[in-house]
Length: 151
Image (cartoon, rainbow, N blue to C red):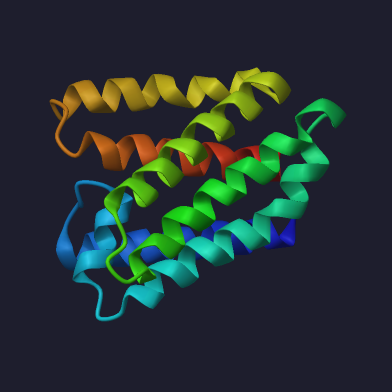
């Protein structure tokens, strides 16, 4: 649980700093382009993934533990993709979709009440008229997952 709290702090500080300095990005993945080094983004994504994996596995039922591994694999692909030389955007997009879909299926099967996090997100998307919608959707997926690990 301590690892998940540390991961939540790392992600919150990273995104808070970025939004304060540069404004709301189009997506969390786009933050990598304004950073002085791509490795910062990779370090954040890897640390969140590795700090939450054990708690995530503990929270899962026996039949859904594989979804925890697939969720983290997607997050690691997202984090590693910017470091690849001539890396195709499809690797990054595939990892992001893999992470988002696997994490939400895992939540739906283990603690479906956490999917209600999407209600305020839907209201927020309507309020901002869809601007930066990818950022808000990714934010909901990540923080929904972190809440799952803490709860």
